[in-house]
Length: 272
Image (cartoon, rainbow, N blue to C red; front, top):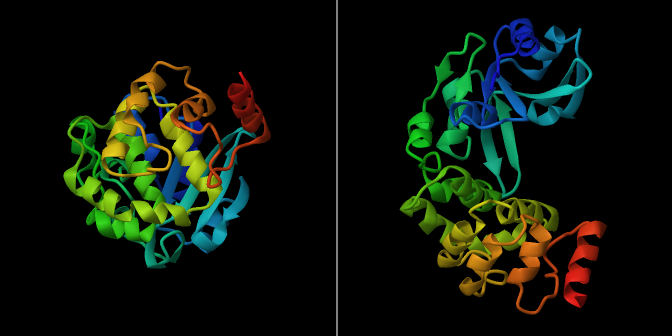
């Protein structure tokens, strides 16, 4: 897999100061395919917009320093200014823009997601993410309790990334914090909760991830019977099929949001 394609390198040269960051760098070192490319820059939105005059730029989250750049009318790259959280409410953050890569890294969720690469291919790893990736460890950056207090969606993301990159035993401090904050998952929107849960359900090792969640008392209304986890892993990797199998009453929970097509499939399974 090549991250630094000519169009990407040209964009980074135009910006003069930008880094590939997050999942694309993580997946590069894990030798996994990556479809989404993110960049981070010490430039403020005003500064980088002046340098991007020749590009198609969509202001997808400009108040948070984020734009989407369209390359060759097809590939998209999300660019965000270095940031630090000023305040959080458990779901949203007030941010200030900064110039420090280290400060930007420390506000991210997991060490394996805080890897940066410049246009020469040099790696910047200030939190030990590459070593964790090589040893199949999924760890929160800093205090897990604080990371979850900032955004409780990270709780479900922990289990998903553990399923993708982790090995047993899972990080004990992370599990303790996840169990503590599990009741706060009810504060998430139906859409965010469903999207993250469905990403877990389609994992090849979904049974192991679900069992880990069960032991941590995460989503007890869904994961009430651990005897079904082995069955789930043998089913097609369809989140609706696997969700239906887990539910004892075969009724859709009110706190999940399915598309019309997904609801029709659920109803079909129930009537079969």
